Amino acid sequence: MDRGFLFGDGIYEVIPTHSGKPVGLQAHLARLANGLAEINIANPYDNKQWEEIIVTLVERNRTAQTGPYIGIYLHVSRGTVMSRQHAYPQDIPPTVFAYGFALASPPQPDVDKVSPLSVALEQDLRWERCHIKSTSLLGNVMHFEQGRMQGKQETILLNANDEVTEASSCNVFVVKDDIIYTPPLDNQLLPGITRMLVIESLSREGMKVKQEVVSKALLLAADEVWLTSSSKEITPVISIADQRVGNGKAGPVWAHAIAIFNRHKFSL
Image (cartoon, rainbow, N blue to C red; front, side, top):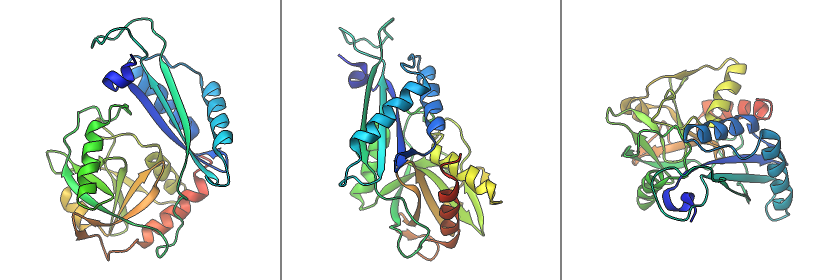
């Protein structure tokens, strides 16, 4: 019996590739290694071996139907056991599962062609170690489903102090008066690789991102709101809990940011 199935006892990564080129590969592999170390699972492969697996999966999954954009899912659980017990078993090899899948085309810097999101807003009821990219995602899944039941594409989450943590599967950026904000990294949110790449690419071209607390009031008064993830890259939000964001369209700061991100994402 696999402990990933029994307990969600594992770590995962999703790595986007464009025409065979991975985005943020070394950062993804570093986060995978850090997550495994945090829950005391031995990393089954070194970075070179992981890279070989990724290359193989990309080659096997690129077809005329999938197109050039392939996501790679890597999943490492603690391994298989003969009986179900909470205690970590000793000296068992981890289970590795990986596959490739088609990604949607990444957004381009055109405010009239991008598909923006409408999102729900909920109190964050997940555990207090959200910085670990665990395969145990029930809390995130339930929050996402609550948004879907309201006809929304995502759910932004607030902590007990009415401060933004993240969305159920994305990090959150807010623009107010041309200043870009994103919540600082702590145990309440995942250290998103796309989040990091956005901050670093914007800084290369003189656009500073303030990593500080984002209140509910700032979120709802924002001129622009974006969600970032490996599959969405930077996607604008046009309504939150049925309240319009800015003018209800993708904004000019987003268009500038995604253009910069596209210029730098393979070199970071």
